[in-house]
Structure formats: C-alpha cells, structure tokens
Amino acid sequence: MRTKFVAGNWKMNVDRAGAVALASALVERLGGVEGTFLVAPPFVYLEAVAGIVAGTNVSLGAQNVAAAANGAHTGEVSAAMLRDVGVKSVILGHSERRNEFYESNKAVNAKLRAALGEGLGAVLCVGEMRSHRLVGVTEEVCRLQLEGALAGIGAEMMGRIVVAYEPVWAIGSGSTPTPADISAVHSSIRSVLGRLYGDPVAAEARIAYGGSVGAENAREILSADGVDGVLVGGASLSAESFSRICAEAARVG
Ligand code: PGA
Image 1 (cartoon, helix red, strand yellow):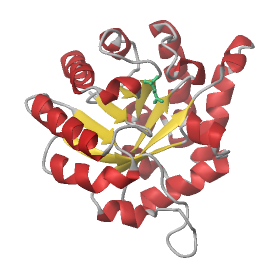
Image 2: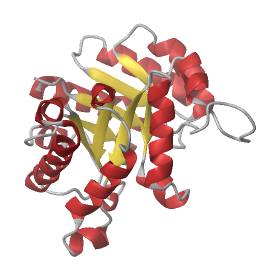
Image 3: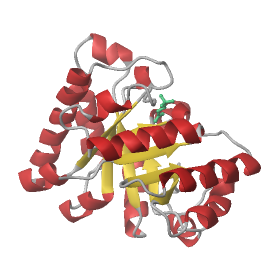
Image 4: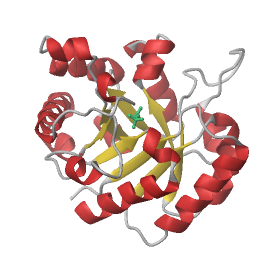
C-alpha cells in the first residue's frame, strides 16, 4: 500500500514572519499524524522554513529549479543550491509555470533531470485546460505532457517522482472533477506509466490530484480509486485547513 502524500504549494504568498508561523504551526499540528507531507514556500523563505521542519514529518519542497547546474543564468537557482538549504523535492510542470512562463515539456524534462541528478524528488504536474476537457482530449493531453517530461528518465527514478494530475480549470476555481473523473484520469496516467516503465513500476507510482482541494472535500478525493495524495494550493496557506487535509490522508491511509 502506498502512503498518501500531501503537498502544500504556497505559491507567491506569505512574508517571512508568515512563513515561519505557518511552518511552526504545521509541525506542531502534524506531529502525531502519520504520512508524507511536503511544503513548498517561496525561495527566499526556504532556509527559514528548513530550520523549522528539519527532523519532522514535514519535508521541504521548492516551487521551481533551474535546468542548468550552475553558471551565468541570472535569476536562476540550481538543484544543488536547493539541496544545500534542505530542499528534498521540487514542484515541476505546474500550469502556472507552463502558462505564465511558457515552460514547455522539454523545459520541464530538463528541470526534472537537473533535480533528479542532484538526488531531489519531484512533483510532476500534468493536466488539461477546460477547452481540452470539453472536446474530450484530457487523457491525450496528460499523456503528451508525461511523455515529454519523462523522456530519457529511467524507471529507477519513479520512486522519487509523484505525478500530480491537476486540471487547469480546477486550480483556484473552487470546482473539481468528480471523484470518478479523477479516478479515470489517474488510471489513464497509470497506464501511460505502465507503457513507459512496465506494470510493476506503474503500480507503485504515486499519482496525486490537485485543484481546489480543501478540508471539506479532501476525504472524498483521497478516497477515490487510484488517488495516492493531493497537491494543495490555497488551502495550504492555513495551518488548520492543511493539517485537516493531512489528517484525512492519514485516516484514508
Ligand atoms: P488550489 O491550487 O488548491 O488553490 O486550487 C492547486 C495547485 O495549484 O496546485
């Protein structure tokens, strides 16, 4: 049985004091809760949060990474630098990066290689826009994103990758697909992974759902077939909501 995974993407929110307060409250609330939890603060607060979550069941994530290892890349932060400050995993392929910053599947693949090469894990986001869903190409879009992002990445790396299915239209909108719809896409993602890496690897792969997950719908979503965890945006900014989601994950097991 895979343990449920819960990740909080703080995006471009909180200030230093807020980051410290949120991380401290989470560590306290999640102390006795079983599971794998991840928080991804803005880069400038990574180190402050690292000091708070060190040695707890909350691990540190980053929201981006450079594809390059080092050198003349103004504004970029390398995987080695992230590892150096205590980051364990990076969120890649998020629709906000794809849409606002034009990150292609090729760019996501390069970043994924950089992260894995430094021993980091990754939360690899894929998902369709509303227009894709309306014309019935959701699974095709996810397949193309997966194939692009995972090109040249070996099966032995899949233990360090969580695939997050995030329908773009569900992010921050308050609307989600039905649990049955989520399960259908997760199952199709798992078959893509099966084709790429073989069924045993696909069976073990962790596939999380993201998009308008909150304390009120976490149980239903986490209980859906094939859902191994959730990636949370807005609701991860409240220690109460996020810890309730983590508690649901532990309970659903
Ligand atoms: P949301 O964001 O929970 O605010 O919808 C999810 C995400 O962007 O991962």
